[in-house]
Length: 179
Image 1 (tube, rainbow, N blue to C red):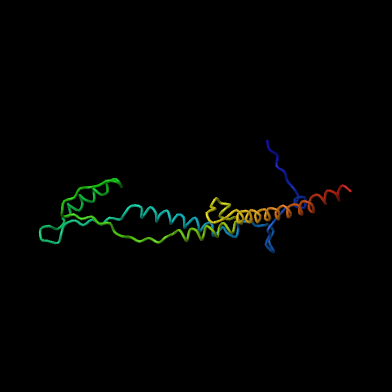
Image 2: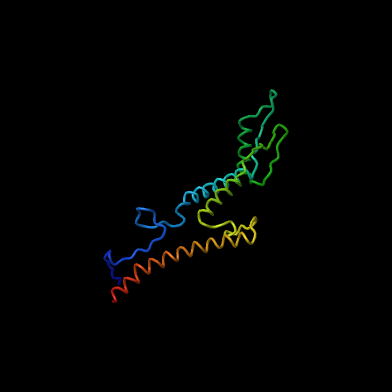
């Protein structure tokens, strides 16, 4: 059996960091880039759709030729449609000379620059670098060390904010009450 605890508001200490002016609560450090994270995720989904769409060529089937008596019939078109729909993606079909299959040349945009750009925005907003995320292709050891120092400074800042609030809001209060 759990008993419900009730605290008076004056007995509760709310330790907060990164508090915007006029707000009661602090914001998580990721708050400014949440929209960028959502956008990057959407771009990744679209890149996956683009890859799926272009991994297999779009084929144009021509049935019949433009001569009297050699045109395609509805029955012939329906039979070919059935064969194509039932065919595995790596399958092949044999067709008579009145049939022609051509791959349609589609040019897709290169999504990599967009993915890289928005990924970098998210990393920057999180206070992380490409090296921190395991992508050290363009960074040297000095760059990695500098970025690690930046993260260490951020953590020290959080620790100092917590230390200050714990000292002033809890420890000093206990010392005053204890005389």
